[in-house]
Length: 238
Image (cartoon, helix red, strand yellow):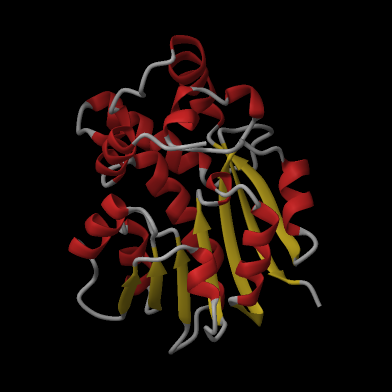
């Protein structure tokens, strides 16, 4: 499915202050931090607008990211941390070629863009050291597939079952959980029913936005029965 350049650009602009995305990033860092050691390297696959790079370098990691989208790459490059960060304008297959494995691999909202997601999972496994940790997030629930997914070029939304089927040939799944249960009505109303872009609620300083951000932060700690996203913590399958 082909992404809309204008919609994608708008989405990248909003994500710079997107409390929903930031809550996922914070959950990722909480899963990673117990294993961070001096000199550790993190690969950020599909770096998007680059905000996660700042969280990772602040935690003492050396970050090497890749981003194939032109607009997202320009935004990430323009806001790149001053040190311990490198960013390449390439997709996962190109990035994985002849590259030494890293201590951590993070892939936020990438698999849904790739037709052969099993091949992408295989490429990701080549990038991870034995004993390292990979964190993956994907949009959840096929019933929520709507305008937002179509405009961003998503191939699918995931259930826990089909994400397991994609990842388990290459990884041991340490944790697999939903995130964003409170956001399900928002996605259903705007993207599926009304077929309209999401309002910039999560990217403003209005009281409603701040309240939504606090809810997302709380949800990032919870093991919810359903959600608009799935997060997975992975180690290499031996």
